[in-house]
Length: 209
Image (cartoon, rainbow, N blue to C red; front, side):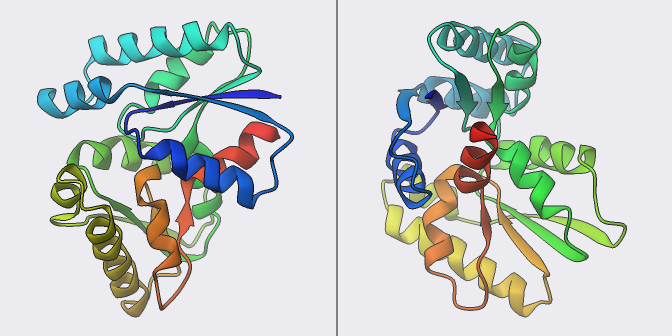
């Protein structure tokens, strides 16, 4: 199976390669395309505009011509996958769809952590749409200062900041903590109080299914 991933951060390529290896998916072929300009445009615009959504969907459609499945790994641009999926001949998935579905099966407080402000609204919208446990309650939190560290290239500091935020939510009584962006995945290995859900693992399982 040929799975093509569209990223908006170069560092996410290694994140997905690691996740695939941990899930034992070596028999599948992974192709990675990185377009940081798409996320940069959304950040500059203060969110996902119709133009950027269409532009991203066009990229996904082009990638779908030579793949068995296409995964959009950027949470800010997520709805572009839904748009592309309407006309693509193969599945086009947003990596956080399966994440939302798994998280909202939890009874109790589900806390979704985001590092980029532009991810808050798309994530909130996605989590509100999926089928949920009657006792699931969603909370959204922006991890202050984390994205600045990421943009400065301080990946270790970025992941430590997110892990600390996740631990604080577990201490606060969260039944489930979600790392909403793929770039946050490494923080799941650094937490002390619980194991947060991450989008690469959930998304890759969904792609295979």
